[in-house]
Image 1 (tube, rainbow, N blue to C red):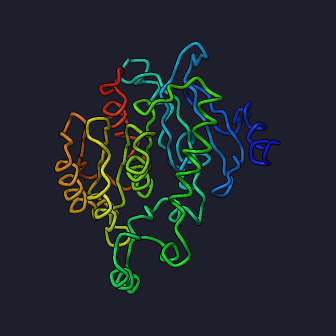
Image 2 (cartoon, rainbow, N blue to C red):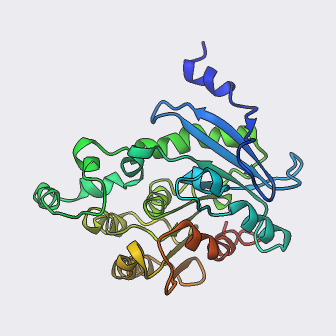
Length: 304
């Protein structure tokens, strides 16, 4: 007998064209209030490029903060990534391989709880946890640490529920070299965490303006023990120098050292870039979006 969740999922197979979202290229299929046994239901927007066909196979980019990606008239700050325009241009010029984008909407007040790598917290001793809780600024909503972290459940939702649905519904290349996870700020944190937690699922991660200072930078300790295999993975980091991004350079320098010590090589399977004058905003990420996409999704996969 089918479970309630499987019945609900079957109702989402066709999806609906998101008429309220305007894109300059391709089209959006919205799966409204996608159900989950792990996290709250949320919208999932799937971007399909012009000429999308079941006769072709596509890489998949899973992007966090899905409501910020395509149409500034629907975002809280009237900014957007312009993912449709950037990717369409790159594909038309054969700078990246054919792909679709799965935009996973964030969960509002639970965003930090779903995006903070919770195993980082579990790795540190209780005395350090208590000391962190007493600090005035930990660069994350304090309630995340007090009321419970949801990142592991959020990743189970993506890996166990959403990805199988996407691979069944759309014409995808389901292997890890063609499955990328991507985000900015806290979305950068959870993208890096996802690749390390599920190296058999995600072959690459794009982490822009990664919010390393969250909870006293303890995610770095997690990384020291949980790096995905350099022989089969690629990862991209960057940061600006204005607003929140002004905090990131010392952390990113340490992260670079951790990855280098674990076999990654700059410009081969690892990039870490600084953008002087860049702010912590969708507009800034849009302006350089082509760079990580070209690095992580070259026309042909570079690793088996």
